[in-house]
Length: 357
Image (cartoon, rainbow, N blue to C red):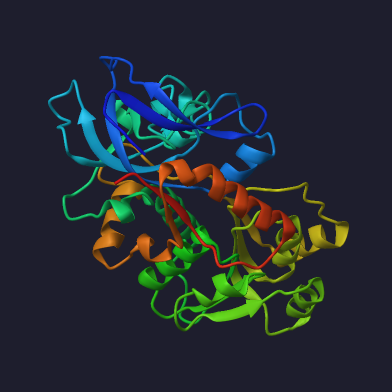
């Protein structure tokens, strides 16, 4: 791939659901933006339905919201060329009631890089200074691409365990994909003595789980029924990361009295909760939490700043990457992985990251 800096190279999603590698002439940088040379960009599970199930907000679209790179061009003294950065993808309006409270993630009229406007499946991206998160020199971009999903994982853990769990309380994480793996590792870092179980349909992903984690493989539907019926399998906390309607309803059954169910996976179909399940929610007096994003408010007291602290403690998202690919290989790999997911084949995949080095 012959790249020079007069041009941007992007993966463009067309209305016909085809991903096309395109060469575009770089436009003049707007005064209120900063140009980032993207180095590492993660592919999120949400990118697959966006690409192949018609769930994009508009077309054409450059997807990608898990981004890390270096400042390439800047009109601001505060932001210097070559500085390492990650990018918070949500663009708030800054005038609604939520924004006025610095609760930007719940903005009433937001935009979003990689979802509503062009994002990171590219060589360059021009972003507002507010969305830039500066990184210390020691942080590797191979870990920093995951600042966004890691912050979501951390927010999930913080909201779920809003009260410090008691020693040996039981926790179930449903789904051992990239986000589930990060959640487990953050739990292990924050709470040393906790009883952790992971549930998944994919043996390869299960085997990547942290040490001293109880693993349970669901190879067929009867396995899930058996797991639920086992009276030993009741949990104080259940974190559902898959968005599967089947897993969500069974998660309610697995809760102890006064338990907490956290839902944070992208829902893939309607969830039908029957009368007896509602009765369980009422009689057990369980709490159900929803997680969507992470706290980012440009202070030293948000989820993104706390992810940096985790990195210093040995948290390494790069260890979970199964495939590092070049930008022009993106359409081929996304299609291959999507077809595998659709056919429910078991294959050795966890995380796909575009490397522009």
